[in-house]
Each structure stands twice: as structure tokens, then as C-alpha cells.
Length: 303
Image 1: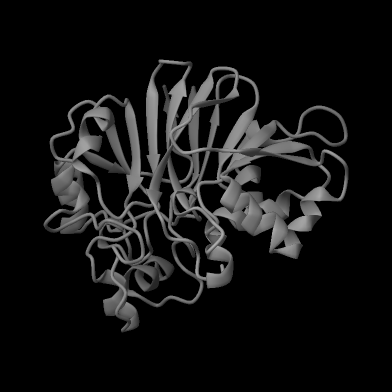
Image 2 (image 1 turned 90 degrees about the vertical axis):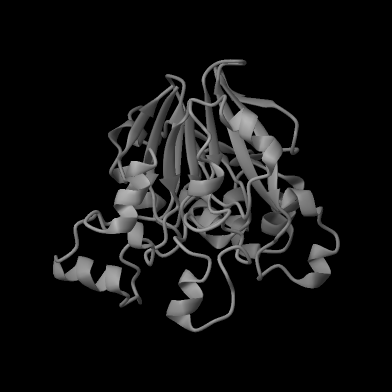
């Protein structure tokens, strides 16, 4: 199975358009030892078609940057066969609106996420202007599913938080366990495994054994500290309250996952304020010394 990281930043990308934090300002001035990054987007393939993990707002430019995703057959064609949605967050679904040009593909999502987009957001009606333009398939946490020949997914409920734009009245009719998913992706039933966990507030102890059975871990690297964003914006929401385990500190991901020996460990979905983006900084060195990597746009993996 081939894995290509098309975008590796959290929402807003890096630099973020309206941010003058230390990282963004130095990157714009050319005084920063680190890479710019577009918003989180991963594509996977077992040899033929490609599957997108979510649909980034940067998806059009990300497709153009990846020749393997370009059309090759006929006047209208795409090797993208499917999109798997792991939440209804805008950063995960807005790219669907850019895939509206009457191209047939499948969308895999929980029934709750499907309802949010198709029953309560009229804009997503552009995906159904033709019969069979888009075919929705329900995903159930805990139920394994083959989405392409040679690509299996095991959906895992990772949070019960729906986006703020979903009204309390609607949330009353949605299942909490269908709000946010992680994915265990296998190259063939029982083959090499990739854990895709870009949004996670904590790691349950009973997850450590199966995580150590994976070949690759793409893991939530959004914030370095629990108060990182609140310190910048002077707001009181912590990283964990936003659904993200911090990288550093007690019970942070570096400490919690230190016992994992087998996987190639890669931080993904990195916020523009995160100091580990600075490859001259102590935070970056701490990450590398702990055996972790940072995902970057264009990064490729083979399983």
C-alpha cells in the first residue's frame, strides 16, 4: 500500500493567513528553518485507484501537486475513487465542495456525519446534482470494511464531540460515538497496518498493544503544550478541550507512547503555533531524540 501525505498542517495551514505568531512571522521573512505546510490531507492506494482520508480545503492545489492524482483517461477522469470522512469538522469536509464537477466517487462516513452534511447543509447538495454522482456508504465504529481491493479499514471512535456549527437540537439525534473516528488501515486483510489518528484527546492504556503492532503511526501533533493556543489567543480552551493530546508534558504523547517500539512514529496535523516546527529549536530536537518524525507535504510511505 502506498501512502502519500498531501498536507500535514492543522486547520489554517502554515503559515496561517491571519497569524503573526513567532513561527508564521519568521517563515514569511525567510528566517525560519522549517517547511510551509498545507492543511492535513492523506491519500492511499493499493496499486490502482486512490482513496482520500478526509477532504481538505486545500485539496485542489494538493491534487495538482501530486501527478498520480491527475486525470489520465478521457476528457473527464480521476483516479480518486473514494473519500473517507473521519469527522464533520470543516477542515475535513470543505474539500468535498471542490470535488463537485460531476465526477463519480464514493464517500465513507458514519451515519451521523452523513446526516449533518446531506440533511442540514444545503451547500453539499452540489454533490448530488446527477444520479449516482456521489454514493454514500455508512461506516460503523468497530466494524471492519474493505474500501478498495487490498485496503481494509477498522474505524475507531476517538471522541464524542461534534463541531460547533452542529446545533444542540440536531446533536440530540446523533450518536456520540459517530462524531470523530480514527482509522486502522491494513494493506490486505491482516497485512501491514497504518494507524491514522489526527485528533485524539488521550490514549487509553489498552490501545498501546495494538498501536505497537502497527508499522506506521500518523498521530495527532497539533499542539506542543496544553495551553498553547489559549496563550496566543487569550482564550481559555486547552488543547485537550479541543480534542487534541499535547505532544509534551505529563501524559502528553511523547511520554504516553514512549514504550512503542515497532511503529514508525510520525506527527501529523501540526498547528502553525507549534514550536516543534522550528528545526533549529529544542522542541524539534526533543521529538527527534524520542524517535519521532514530523510529516511534511509530499511525504511518501510504503506498507
